[in-house]
Image (cartoon, rainbow, N blue to C red; front, top):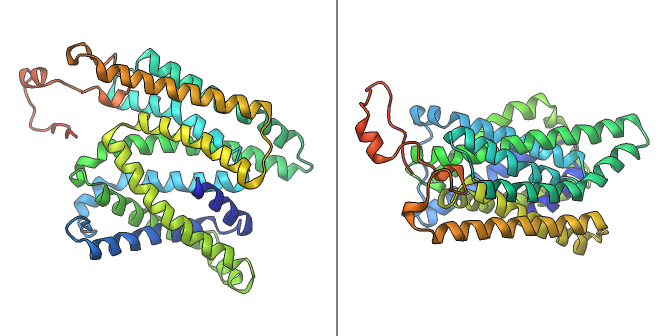
Length: 338
């Protein structure tokens, strides 16, 4: 929640420096990981970044992480904070779709129903804001920016869903270490962003920013979001590691509702009837999903099948008996289990 509010403040003050802003956040996260390793070397292990084989294994998730951060930031730059929540709503069904495709299993009807309820809640809350932002725009460029924000939001949603699923499948490559995966993704994403900073002409913009008064907002905002982003990155990796991408996204949906309420308290935003209905529906869908997971946890193990499981990630590709009964091919390695 702090990330969205401070990010929006910085992007409002320095809209021409989106890539530099992300780069500084990632750099702060890398520095904090090194400091944590110095303080507690037994608990925090910095991976060997010169391991080219490991770098090739993690290339896809690092690239997806960069695209996710870029479109997340561009969407937030072009739209207001409340409209930005449409991205969080679209993440839920997209995560279920990507998870189902990755595991070749279907989620239960109850999980699909909960996802539809949560998504409906977000769409109701932002639909009025979307139409008014486009129709009430006084210039063609303003209408273009509003429409561009919608496109960025959808791309951000899809990449966030893909990134969450990749985290679950990539953790075995780093010995199930959330710290090591966080280091690889943050350091790798920072390297990917350097060409974007140069090509976007942000070095010149940074030099001009130093001479302006707005550099204070940019500097403080970068430090605050860098620190909070570091802890959020670790928390996200641990959450997906111990649960699943789908469960994590439902928790994010509930957090976004609280974020809207804080926006009303901090910025004095007006809660319309659509926004109030959105909050109620979103919370109802999240509570329903929590109830479904609680019922599944109490069910006997024998009665739990891949089809009845709430999350596609919980469905194994093959059980042990089937795996032992099938002849193994030396050219096809087994899928690493969590």
